[in-house]
Image (cartoon, rainbow, N blue to C red; front, side, top):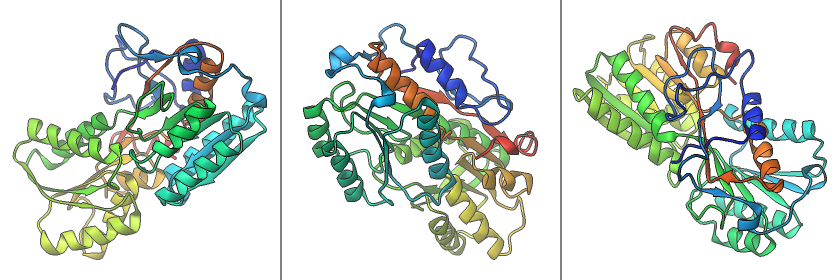
Length: 358
């Protein structure tokens, strides 16, 4: 993924994504993304409209300039708001819209049904929305949406998951984390927690999206590199859901009672795994648990000794999404990928930084 140096408008918005009490701190040279952030740091935009980074302008995309305050805006959420990530994500969109004075915001929730999400978005296009912000459930299967949006020159900003399509043609830009880097960071923490040896299981996210694919490949590649004596002995999808994470871990403990580590590709599955570990009579720390998201429940699990580390995936996309749209409608170039940097929680900072979790 390319690293993007945002415009001044976008950068100021990026700083607003920071969690309570957090402050932004740039990389030394702006050339890296996803490295372990200091305990005080929150989400940051990693660099660059520099050398060769692809950008898109309203003239390239087509369409007309408009004022967001008077625009009709649509937001499509992919999953029910029981997961803290989705709650925080939707609230961030609503809060920023209210802050900017956007009075015509339509929000929908697909409740993890891809056909419903496609239908939701198509109905919003038919109703005349002029900007779409989409948290996609799947990375493929959006052709009918692109056809409708293209015909009406409606720009689409995708957040937290990428759509497999052409930027500046099918959609405007993607805003989110470097998911492969998240997987690598999780692997580094797992290797450290396990002393570079033992058996680890992966609770895979939902199939059909780039988050699962990249968090898996990033973890596996890094484990092979830094801790070849750690063997991945079990992989099964938990669909990013706590209940599924618990059920899969119960099965795991039956087939691999000597497991040493569990990598949850989100916090909800990891918390389900911890419930299963407790049910199996395990003690805190018997099985090392590392996950990705940064929810309060998972960070509390570090404080309580049940988890070793949590890599954040920041859901507060509202400020950056609307700042990017303002830049685009104002005629400024927008990068095809806007990659944020995420903080990290471990035994050294979890208690002190719990308030920054969502």
